[in-house]
Image 1 (cartoon, rainbow, N blue to C red):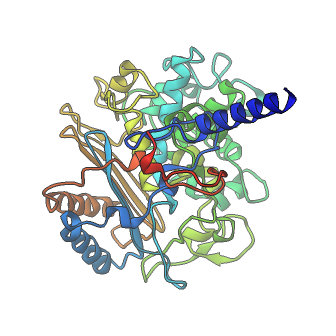
Image 2 (image 1 turned 180 degrees about the horizontal axis):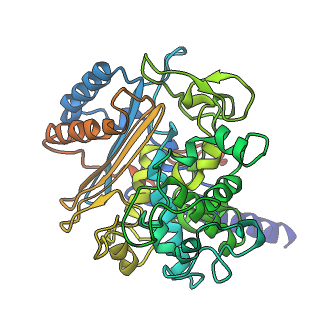
Length: 446
């Protein structure tokens, strides 16, 4: 009797394990858990899965472009009708070691990060923790503590969350972008570098606005750094943790993070970054006195945070886009009402929320540029959307994203028929997941 009971218990345990780890068909991916116990989709696919006759011409176009612009490496992800039909790396993630870019390679996505931050703000509104009309500063503002009380321009107290989202807050880069003036701000604020985001915001508050909030627009990285602090205040947890727990993980995204300024602190699967041959070095943001490239210690990525600090693979970044596209193909993380509001410029013509540009036909795009990286995310209503990210910058600066757009138009047109698979649902068996011997291959499971 005892032996029978013991056998029964063992059978139940095995069935539970099988149900939790192996419960999926040949068409469907395993259910996404609420933690990071499953690998990111970008870790479950390889370049070989996107090698096919249909895309050979596209490969040639892409490789020719990399040679022309002296770009070390790039990653591309293409979605068609809700399926990840293409995800591939090109060139090198590390030139010296001849390490190739693969789907799991992480890239800085620069200002595409603003779309992530904007999504988090909209999520907080849906959770009832804020309204876009809420004031940010002053006694009636969200950031109303002593830290941000030294306000020189009274108009600053009229800045709303929506003003920051739409780049119409009154902050501008007329005298230089404060996010890229760390040493000057440290000297002015009489603090030792490296400075943090709080000091940068305090510096901005001690100056007059360039215009009355809401009256016109001016692109502002600072505005999205302030939004990061708004998120932390209302969510009562660090910005990165809130975004991962409430936006990314529920969307099946597990390998997006805030990046680091120095190469020595990079994630193991993060690429190296390369600047144009005539790039000049500048003083390190940390005040060490070292002369460095902007891509490796010149810019303070940690402070840039919600405005430009995220790193991601192409496959996971496009999956994030699909979580805010208003389409039924995959579940959205936001309501259709929020998504529509984000993609609709206001009556004064100010920027859409998070996106760089939107058109009424459902074409939306978001660009990002930093020294050593360029990114373009584009949503097309025709069902074919894409991400392209490079680990190199060129003399074209932020205009290089226009060249990426032209490249991708040619790239997509060269493919007459996309592969009939969905890499989102690809699952490679791993020893740490499948610990039982003599199990059938996953293709045979039903």
